[in-house]
Image (cartoon, rainbow, N blue to C red; front, side):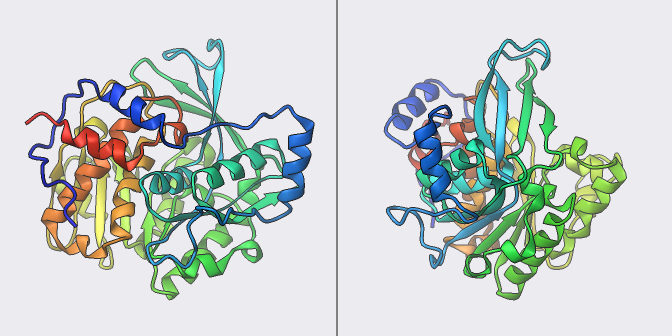
Length: 387
């Protein structure tokens, strides 16, 4: 399905897009955190979320949907400084924002009008209840979400440098997402998916590592397409070598892989991420599509039959948190509807322009989930591309 009949260029200077997305987003459902201090609300949520999250049947995607994308892994709270360019110690205040790469992708797909579900574990605490509510409010199926009474929901403090890039400090020792067990997996949702998406953070420790491997195997055996974004967070791994080994341990099971320039350098031990010969070392026989994201410069794509580049969109960067996840949501939302895009380079390029726009719009606001755009905002932005 061609999405961009009137789009004739691949680069963009955004004039007025911030106003555009603000006007559209006021009409869409964005992150609205529930109060965390009210004991009646707390007791109400506590009674609703015992072990398994309950998804709303009013607007929440059905797990039988043939275009369902199931996202597996961590969901947490990002604390983002209200002032950019300062260290954690110097930041005067922090804004609370829901995050976690797989959850970001799930919400991103739903915002774009797709069907998604999230599988993971949070603490049986106020932040965990809040995150479950946010998924439901954003029409993400949360039937596969679990709550741990003995571990807290993970937290991440994220510093924003003057250029919008991030540095992380994590609080998860252990956090609930690390404790998801294989017996807690909702295999019914996983095996009914069109695409099963995951990262590498869930591979760091047991029991979540074994749960991750079991979930991916169940999906593969059911004929589900596997999507992998390594999403390297080196401070969470015991060492650089363990991170490299862990990320590559499941590399050859994925059908689609999205990776950044920095991750290519890391996995190849310092080789040039802009060299096609280096990138091709990361291809494997069963891989259908390898995507390399380059921030404002767009992305590269590699398959058995073709490869190329799709230019990015130029915007004013506020916070890069969630940009890669928005990109993944953009491309998976379209592949889930029409997997034949993988064989048609022209249509794949159109889909990647859409995904690039999703990433660009996300960096214009603070936080990940709060900044994810709707389909209407993305399409309107693409129509304003300067030829």
